[in-house]
Image (cartoon, rainbow, N blue to C red):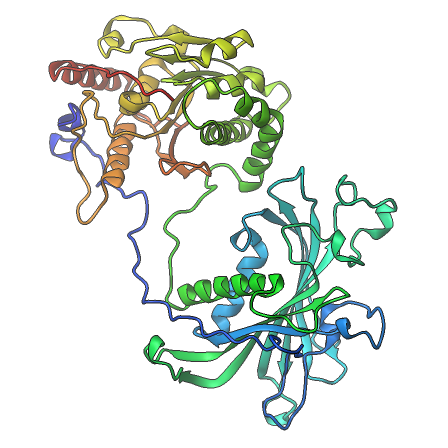
Length: 553
């Protein structure tokens, strides 16, 4: 037993609510059909057709790209159909997913950090018709793509426009018979050293004249188009491998290449492989949308993604190189450096919001890194102008270098009995940081209550109860992982010691990324809280509290 659950349990007269799960229950989707791919331009360049029959030769207009042709006869100046496959979800799912991917391009490329929306425009249908061909622009979203490696790649702008082609038949003239979303790359950040532009101001927002102006994270094309050609009604696909799953039309991708371009685009061509990856992502997400997939985990609930990512990138540029090069531990430096920088970025973002970002706000923050391990988090926060101390049972190799540069790192042995006898004045008003603190994890909210902390963060790692053992109460019912049970256990302790529970799964390279945040106190009589602390301590000591040797992180 945990040594405190008898006091926490609703059976003991507590008003605590039922245990809460951290994530939604795993959702089992039907098996996703295998993509049946075709490559229209594998042998000879083929334009994307808008024809409803073989006798009707009609193609997607070049004008949808928004580009001005460089010449009227150059072969590379038109759309090329690259890849297509049956659509196993309706056009509504396709449109939902495309709009989501426009706002979250990082889901299609790990080299993209995020997109910022510059402008959104809804078109007047009466003026958006394209030369009587039945095509009408519906809307345009201009976005700025932010690279994950800003020292190597530059920001690029892009127009993302939705077009519907309507039937020319008067009886069905209000029914779209085809949809296309066109991505048109535009020059964005012209000041980046790698882009090599001299006349920067006049070129911003213009289409790139050559592929050298396209950053690494984007296909080297003048325009990219995602097509949905719906069927008149869902039909089973005639293949044994997909068990008769209905198809709702055809998904395809086409592009306008830079000149010179090859006479054909084989399945192994770089642009074809990129298109294959994009089509696979579309297939996966539209299938999930069709079957009402619910995301299990929601990031950035406490610190906005933009604030977190910008802070993280700034820390990475300032410290990553020197920290990795000078790593003194036997562990993987990259994992630890990037993980601790991610936690530091989250803390800095959280604190900036908490203190309103007013001038001199960093001077108001004090922290105690409880179970600081290698001391890296304490060191980074010190370098960023925050005052605090890191405490751990045993000194680590890294400490010599960090303390030489001003970080406060000290050996400290926690014993629950100290909460009954020693003053906690030095911790009063500080933020307690429980960063994978092992046996100290369940004690973080207890310590925060006892010493009158300003708040705390707590990232559980190994599964320890308040008595220092690995036996904690399993309060969740059903098929629930041990990790989920432990998160529920830590949540109950936080609630019991009068802290409002806030949770955020951090964007760090660790599977143990759930971060509990305590920054708001519930109204509970102080005498009641002192009695709860006393009960927790007595139970821990009665069952033989002991802290094992810390890990060598």
